Every structure is written in structure tokens, then in C-alpha cells.
Amino acid sequence: MRPDDLELEELVTISHANINLRGHRLVLHSINAFAQFREDILGMLGEEHGRRLFTRFGYFCGQADAAALQKLFRWESLEDWLRAGARMHGLMGIVRADITELQVDEASGKLYLECTWHNSAEAVEHLMEIGPVDYTVCWKLTGYASGFASYCLGKSVYFLERSCRGKGDRVCKAVGMDGDSWGAEITPHLPFFEAEDIKGTVENLMGQLLMKTRELERQRKRMDRLSHDAASSFVEIRNKQMQEVLDLSSRVAHFDTSVLITGETGVGKEVLARYIHDASHRSKGLFVPVNCASLPETLLESELFGHKAGSFTGAVRDRIGLFEEASGGTIFLDEIGDISAATQMKILRVLQEKEVLRIGENKARRIDVRVIAATNQDLKKAVAEGRFREDLLYRLRVIEIEMPPLRTRPEDILPLARMLIKRVAKKLKLRRLRLDAACADILLAYAWPGNVRELENILERAAVLSREGVILPDHLPSQIVNQASVLSSKTGLYKGTLAEVEQKYIEQVLDEVDGNRTKAAKALGISSTTLWRKLKSQDKDT
Image 1 (spheres, rainbow, N blue to C red):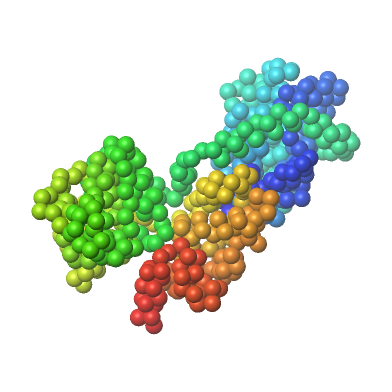
Image 2: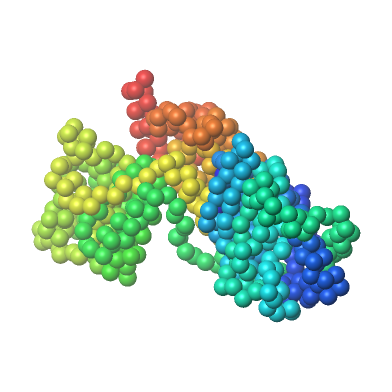
């Protein structure tokens, strides 16, 4: 688990009068109300005792969040766990925390952490009711950071502000170190972290946090509505290789150059083709996808090039082909490696001459179409074996873009899952559908031989089985949970080859459906033809 993977909606469950973070009840509060509360506290107790009160309150919150995150997730390192505290602060709307330097030695318990706090809610609270002062005021923030880090490190850690908006600085900055590293400098600040005389005050403070939640609830509902109404197909991409794919695609989109997209079944080759089309000057024209493997050879030729009435049995009227239909736009030829030599020759002519000849006609028709093709096969090998024309490969592969499999981009799994859940929610009319945080490590540990298509199918299945709009581990297929456990290691990666992963997974899916290949293909998110080809390939290997 990485700190950037944390999402508030997956950590928190909300029901009537109960907001819950894995057994820890939460409450919302208005910044205006807390600003007035802060003024009253300082007026009654004075600056010193008020600071102690707010520091300890933050400290308790930090310890509670650190404990909850330790229970929920497997963190790859102590550093990631520490960074998760800053992420939590941002998710809760308290502050945007940027860690600028972090050095930690788990063995010795030494810690040095520098962070910048942007738009501190606590500084805003202070300025609203009290105004600028000559001392730092983000006491809850320093308390939270100290409590969180102390829990993670297992020894006392203290944060002090070096600059603060409450006293006129541009941003708030803080430094955190273990007590030994601070030395004598921390001594005058230690009383603010002591709790002997404020325990009862903290308990009273919790009651004040229930005020003015209605306005925040309306705002949250509005954001949920906007999120579900959004029809965007874009998703946050974190993987460097995939970012390079999108960068290349964006540059290629502005030219009418033919593109060949390669990659395993289910990686999203058609999605990328649509991305290129939408970013091109042809975006107002049609995007016409054709799955070449799903059509018989005779029907494929008629579909692609069209026919004249009477040219063959059943041709009762003239029919325009898909190349002509896509004129002015883009045609996407998926599974291009499965077409016959005769069809290869006709597609080559279209690419060379920019014209098509309908079946049964002698006069060619000019077309203006961009061709994007895709395959999960090794076309170089197909050329060497005589199954694919070399000249056609050159025409199609002016630009080749290889889509990486999902297992090589684990940092993209959760963003993709969240985007797909929104899509499934809209399809199934499950407005509040969300992923429970307990599913995160299962999805991250699994190898995903079926790639994005498999992920989408599994999430839709889980959504159908879910209750109250929450996808739990129990709603995921047993092979996903079990296989994720088998494939997980201390590094989180399976060390076998792709062929081994795929073979084991296909065998398990076939067992689940009692050997029914049609059902297995549906569960895998591939066609029956593709499953047959994979099984045949496995038989040859054995």
C-alpha cells in the first residue's frame, strides 16, 4: 500500500448519525464554529493552556489515525506509513501537507521530517476570530503530526512550527524529530504535550465538534452527485511507462499516420485508439471499431469493403462498408493478426491507394480514413511464419505503441478500479457504490492476467453482489482472493512467467465453471476463440 492510494470514501463509512473509520467514530465540524470555539478557549484559559489543550487534542487524533492505518493496510516501509499521516490530513480537509525532507532510521529510532502546510484550516480559524499574532498557532497540526509519528516510531516524536500564516508568514512550515535528536531545544515545549491537567477539557471539547454539520453534508452530497454524473473516461495514470504511452499517443494523434497498438488481451487497446481519435482533428468524424477475429472471413470482407446487390447469395441491396462509413474519421481494426491473406491484400490496397472496391463492383471509391490497428500477437513472428504480409505490417506499423499489462503497473490498479466503479455505478444505477478499503491489498496483490477487462468484469460482479453500495472482499470472486494470496510475496510480486500465471489462472477459472469454456471465457473477459487459442498453446508447451 502507498500513501497516495488512500481515499477517504474507502476508509470511512457513513450512515445515519454515524461516521466511522474502522471502529473509530468521527464527527464533522464547521471551521467557523471551531474558530469561535478557539476564541472562547483562549479567552477562558489563556494562550499557554489553550495551546496545550489543542496540541493534545491533535496528538490524540494522530495516534488514533496511525493505529487505524496500521490495522487496515500492509505498508511497504515505515516511511510510507509516516507519509500516510500527511495524506490523511489532506483527505480530511485540514491542510495540504507536502513532506520536503524525510530521514528515518527504524533501528535507532531516529527521525527528521520537514513539511510545508498549505492552507492550514487552523491558521484560518485563528485569523478569523483572533487575528494576526506574533507566535505560531497551528497547535492541532503539530499535535497530530507528533502523535501520528510517535505511534509509528514507537517513541516520542515532537513537531514544532518554524513559520506560520497566523503570524504573517506566507506558509506554515514545521520540523519533526525524535526527542533525543531535539536535545535541549525541545525542553520548553514539552509541557504543551503533557496531558495531566487537560484530560477533562479534551472530553468536553469532543462535544463541541457536533456543531453545524448540515452545511458540510449538503456539500458532500453535491460533490457525490457531480462525481457520478461525470462521463469522463480519463483516469489518473501514475505508471511511468503508461505515461509515456499516453504522451506518444497525444503527439501521434495530430497526424494521420497509421498506428499499430500491441499488447495482451484486455489491456485497453481500443480505449487507447479512441483516445487518439478524440485528440485528433478527426474527432468530429466517426470512430468505427471492428473486431476482425469475431467475424467469419466472408462476412468480414463484406463488412469492411461493402457489396453490390446480387454480388452473392443474400446480398439483396447495396451496402456501404465500414471503411467508407469511417471516411472522415477513424477505423479501428482489432485483432488484425487473425485476418486471412486475401483480406490482408485488400487492406494493404486501401492503405496504399486510399480507395475501396465493393464486392461485385469494378469502380473504386475514394475514402479519407485513418487506420489504427491492434493485436495481441507477435506480427514479426507471423511474418516469419508466412501468416502475415510484411508489406502490410510496415504500412500498419508506421508508429507502434505497446500497451503494458496491468501487472507491471500496480500503482495504476486502484485509480483504475475507482474509475471503473464509477462507470459500473452509473450502469447499475448504484449511486453510492464504493470500494471498501479492505479490498485494496487484495487488488494490488493479484497478478491480473486478464488485465483491465478482467478488473472491470470482477468489479461489476462485486457491485451486483454488494449490499448498501459497499464492495467488500467477500464480494470478490474466490479465485481473486485465493490467487492474490498465492501470488503475494514480501515484495508483492509473483516471480513466475506470464505463461505460468495465465495457465494457472485459466485452469482455476475452468474448475470454477466445471470445465464450461463458454462460461470461462466470459469470466476471463475474452472471446471463446481466444480461450481456445490459449488452451491450444498450453497443450503445445506441455
